Amino acid sequence: MSTVNTLRGPIDATRIGTTLMHEHIMARNPELEQNIEHPEYDEAAIVERARTSLTSLHEDKGIDTFVDLTVLGLGRDIPTVQRLAEGVPLNIVVATGYYTAKDLPTYFHTHAPDGLVGRTLGGPDVLETMFTQDITTGIPRTDGVRAGIIKIVTDEHGITPDLDRVYRTAARAQAETGVPISTHTNVAHANGRDQQKWFAANGVDLERTVIGHSGDSTDLDYLKELMDNGSFIGMDRFGMEFVLDDASRIDTLVTLLGQGYAEKITISHDAGFFSINTPPSWRAEHTPNWHHHRISDHVLPELRRRGVTEDQITQMMVVNPVQVLTGDTAAAQAVAATALGAGVS
Image (tube, rainbow, N blue to C red):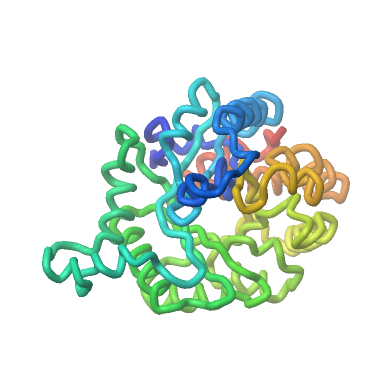
């Protein structure tokens, strides 16, 4: 049976279970943290809050796997995640990739094969080396933790020259390692279309991609187009009501499920335990429902009330994550044979 890389090592598909496919533990900026006083950044408190919440997600809400899509550009800090995950009975899948809406840092230009340093030293592209080694040999300073998914971005600027380089790096890493690609989009710019066109033109299997933040859109034609082309879509910002209220998100999801799209949808929150960009006090006042328990506490009960079946929920939260993370249809079918009919907490 196919396996998936997690924080504690590879697990087989039968252990993936009920999964949140697009989440974060911390979004940080070490440079800002060192130079701008941030009264709400208390690492010990964040670690304890995350440990308590993740444990509750598993023990009280039945969540088995948490996909942390925090990558470089968002302050990925796997050693801290390892520390807070000690004793947490939950699978955590971590990511490689780079989060930028437009430009890469100067380092990746000077160390590119044709850059000031790169053309002198020779050797492979440092960006490509990073993506691939994160997946195959392990993330630096983590004792061999390997990424199980690739995260890339498109936003208001579209696929810029630097993003094209990131995309090409992601495509090569996926082809070499077999892990999936999950994206960030801005639905106001219908980035999912641009991403799919790029993927198709460059040999990326759309079946191994999740077009993220699709749930910010209520445009059914756009969402169905993405799924009909082969990608999964992430209805992955439940609770982020300053972008779109949950009632509208649920309406859209119920409609798509009623039209037979359960096999192409994943659901999640895109929430985190700390972000320097949207600190806890701001979230508590302006977006109190944006947390990792929102789907379990509110969305699933509402879906059930609206007539969504247990098998549809299981498809989105159990079977589809196996298909995405492993790319192994036989494994997904085997999991479906056991999970469908059993239900999700």
